[in-house]
Image (tube, rainbow, N blue to C red; front, side, top):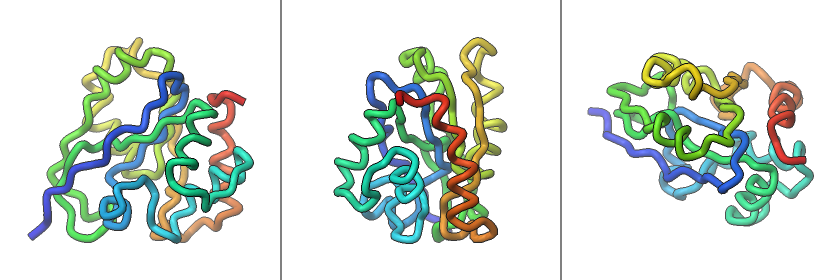
Amino acid sequence: MAERLTSLAAVLPPDTRLLVLGSMPGAASLAAQQYYAHPRNAFWPIMGQLFDFAYDLPYPQRLMQLQAQGIGLWDVLQSCERQGSLDSAIRAETPNDFASLLQQQPQIRALAFNGAKAAQSFRKLVLPTLAPEQVPALMQLPSTSPAHASLNLTNKLKAWQSICQYCIL
């Protein structure tokens, strides 16, 4: 039987311009209570290369580096049922409250989806609930998960460079 999981709290600096959205944190991230905690997840190495910081800094310092760029982190799903960590195992999805978030944080200019499942869940569960003027730019990027092995780090990095146009540089 699949366990009911709850996502991590949003990391939202007051000047968030770009919100990176996963589907639901994997087991390693939930256990550590840190976004992208799996040691083979490419998220932090990609962010480190894009914004010139050591990806192995302590977690609070990595979050500060993102904050300095106007980047926030959250998940599309507030909760779901899932056995293991694979997105393909996600069932019984409940989305986070994006209508309230986007109303409270109108400076958010773009949502970057970390993988296809995050984008799919957002389009299915959230987008129909938003007024057209609430919807910022939407960007689906390749998953940084080690399970998404069809692209290497170099190709993932190239795709993720598109977020820089929304950041504070």
